[in-house]
Image (cartoon, rainbow, N blue to C red; front, side):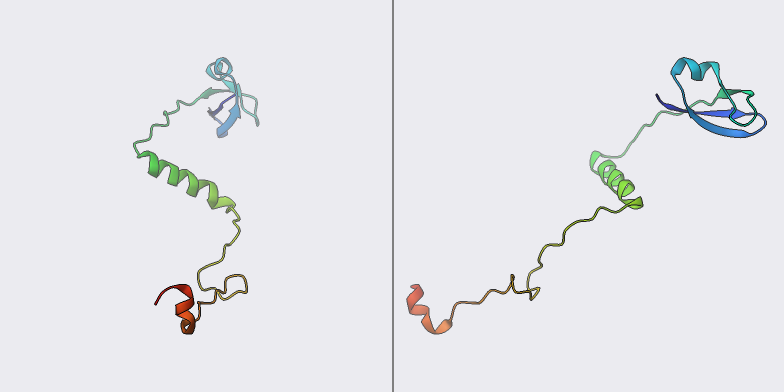
Length: 98
């Protein structure tokens, strides 16, 4: 069920889950129980390109709880796993590079 916004004349705005039929009839205010009318909602129309929309959605989802990623090894990081020794220059004839 979708979330609709309602307006109570005494207590202001509140949101609640309701079916379409129930939202059109209005809901009771959670504080005073008075019947409250539903507020009109604007459609979610986006004029962004799909790439910008995906980037915005990604930024929105990572703003509250960033995604933890495993760090890979960077070039020349210096750890034992990344140390690569260059072939010796004195034995170039063995590699067929004469």
